Length: 146
Image 1 (cartoon, rainbow, N blue to C red):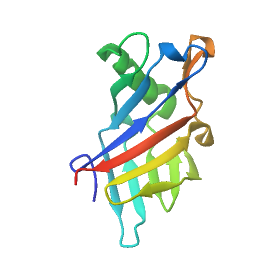
Image 2: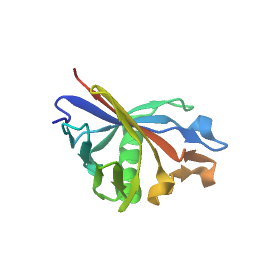
Image 3: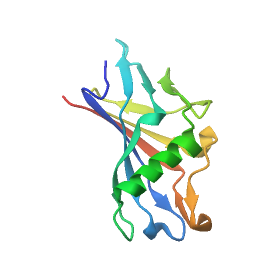
Image 4: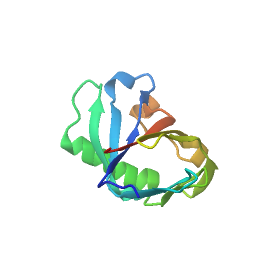
């Protein structure tokens, strides 16, 4: 069994659009989640979308402060994921109420998946009249503590 006590689950976003240099590439920590790996190597994971915490923002014109991080977390919760359950099982991810197959790699200590938001009917966040936006593809990583 894996979870925050013995592993770290993070989401990594990239920025896009004409004003991309004004934005930040984000690292988001998932604070409440659990995963199991059965004897055949099949992974099942459940994550609480209301437990996302922005831990790092790289790039941008200015550094990302606590107020900006809190605003991003609120936007993710209220406008993007809306508390919908997140589950990965049997090679499929359920996100935003939609289930789609995704490829996940896991070698016993590190795992990785690339998720295209629009595959799950999520419109990537944008600001400044669409000139600053989060790229459609986000990367999810899990790393065990040993």
